[in-house]
Image (cartoon, rainbow, N blue to C red; front, side):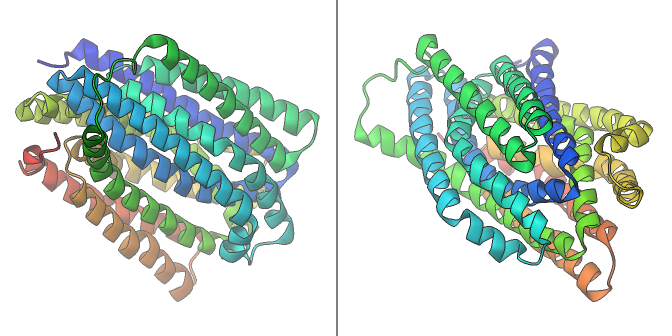
Length: 441
């Protein structure tokens, strides 16, 4: 038995805490920015949609490296683990710098192109936020790569502590830059950039002194090409899936913008609070990678299936609990944002429906594909996710809003249909034995 119940608990609890802290930053940002008005809230929400695309690219790279590292760890080849880590860090830094250059050169035109029909004050807040937060992406890239490597080895504590430090700096920065200095959306961006930079430097120092990447053995160009190819085999399909998914979110975001500031602000607040309800799904998805990856790398596919089922069951139980809590405390949570009565009513409608459908579909729709990727089965999740997103999340949303003139709730209903479709097809894939036969190493 590769992971006992105690070991699974030791792995998942820090991941759950980390996801809570990540969500807390989103809620805190929106809460703090709300003091600058709904235009600032909406502007930050627009940029966050683009940021999701950027972080998806970084996450895909980190997923590729972490899957390869976890399978080599399961096979007992520590030198390949170290070399994979070095290649991942170098690639992450390079991509982060390219993204920084792209944001600074093309950020403002991209905002005008995508969200040109929003109010002028919303657009100004979005520009201020995007221009500053762009400098944090190289730090975020390296930070994400290091924490992914630690998680691939079953060490989720480093990732959790890093998230804690990020959040403490971010909250303190938000208070200073927004509440004290009155910088609005730009203040939120400064706090985010500062927190990512500090934690990135701390993690680099930790890696340098830990020896985790110090012994890659004799390295040849062929080794580097082979490992890079393996990482890209996982990372490219994952990146395509994540990028197209994010582009789909951008298209849907245009619908929110066309519905006015109330819809934008309600979606931003409800989106931040809904992340609380899906915390367990994010934590279990992260846990799937080292657990399934190491089992497959050790040549134990039946153990991978058993552990995957156990983690999925845990996700469903925890998701039911968090959604019940969000439902019970919905008036108090929505009251944190200081929104108008009209906007608050929309937030309530969105979250009530979310609590129902997230409990039913989210674990199977998002935790199972994480298990498939950890085993090296990446094309199937990519095809299903992209097709479902295009047909339901995007296509059905446009039908509801442009065709039938419905409001923001209809967009969320289209998203729930997307979740249900994913849950069914990924569930069928997991219960087959096809994913267990994929070979990566």
